[in-house]
Length: 173
Image 1 (cartoon, rainbow, N blue to C red):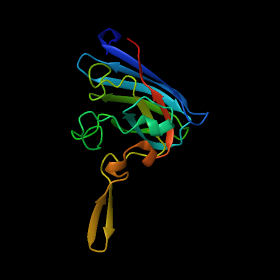
Image 2 (tube, rainbow, N blue to C red):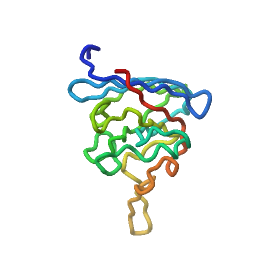
Image 3 (cartoon, one colour):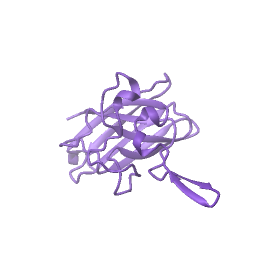
């Protein structure tokens, strides 16, 4: 899409808990409501990493102070393609063998303007993958049990996965 068609812009500069984690993300809001998130993060461990918008931009106490996933409509945890999902559920990003994640995500639930804007909120990349709300199937003898990891009641990042990094989205209007 042409730059002239963008209605709002945001950026997040990344400096991780580890000195070697660096990068940036650009958020472009298009007139149709789609947000295009692009960027590059280096210094990650290879593999999948959960990628979320958290409710608060307060990083004074690390991940603990960023709160739960951004969820203004009070929905259950899910995958980005699910109708039932937190607005901040952006799925997983993939770091290659070199520890680099190239990001290109399109989403309609993370606006840069309006009452549910993500400006000023924290974006968290976790060390481990997101289960996308699917949980695990555990078999106990003849019984099958569906469990979520992490439990839905403890979606704050302090109770889920070790934090790799966090950063705040700022507006470029």
